[in-house]
Image: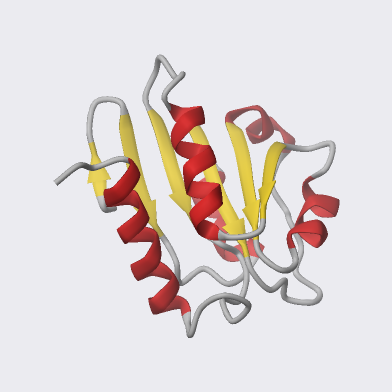
Length: 137
């Protein structure tokens, strides 16, 4: 958890490298803006009960974004972009229209090596972007 206010909770789970490791975070009644992407891990499955789908909007970036879309299609609404910076910019504009509290979940469900040295580098970049777009210092 890197931020929590009346209107926005931000979670950085950059360590997440599979869909199954992300699933527990998605089991919520809260509105979730889920940022995911990178290098898809072969054989990974998206096993989330359909009752949660309406609460989640996915923002997919990275090299294997089309593989993720095949899995999420007809389940979640989603936006696509090539990189994390672009996707954060899209999310920031989208969240501004929300009236109720939302959760911004960075849980990539993928390996980070398409754009980052490792998951720690990916998490650090996410935090930098969050401060740029959401939390003014």
